[in-house]
Image (cartoon, rainbow, N blue to C red; front, side, top):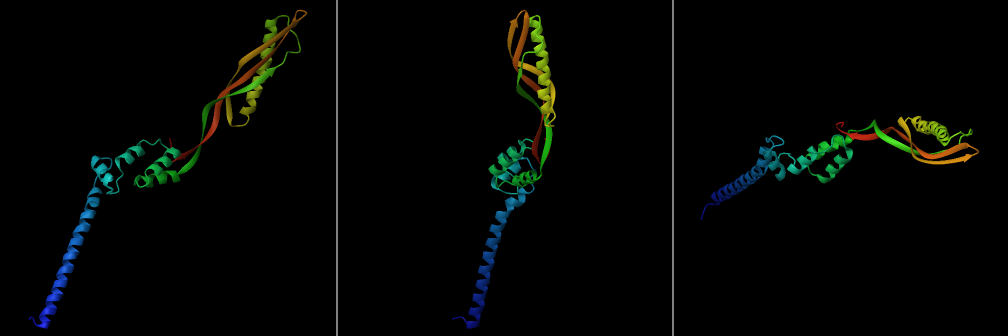
Length: 205
């Protein structure tokens, strides 16, 4: 039989050794878990090493798929950024996508556009001696009407007319006592530019 004091000392030593051993094991496990993350933080971006780290979720690196999707985003495209954000919710690149979406601004620009407006030109008040002359007089009046129709849209500030033309012409001519009159149904084709407003997110296009 060991003396009571010696038994207490041995018990205390055994407990200390057990606790110390457990602490050592836990420390080893913790270091093993944090080691890849620590090492991956040294990996240069856009490298195979970084892609491997991203696949494991270490070092705050994105996966290769997320990195390539982000690189392919059209500059300033808000819709594409939103789609990327939804597809790669857990990616570190989501923070950058959120930042660009927050930097949203409206940009005005002019883009090519055209308008086609219905036009009817009645017969002229003064009959002509030939059908050709009657057509010419009616066409001249129709062209003036087309210019007027296109100008109404030009005045809005949302459309800039560059060229006006008559299209889809449908003629109707009549003659009486060697006098000719013609009417014309057509379209006034207004070619020009239209003002458009586009949302831009992050870098401009």
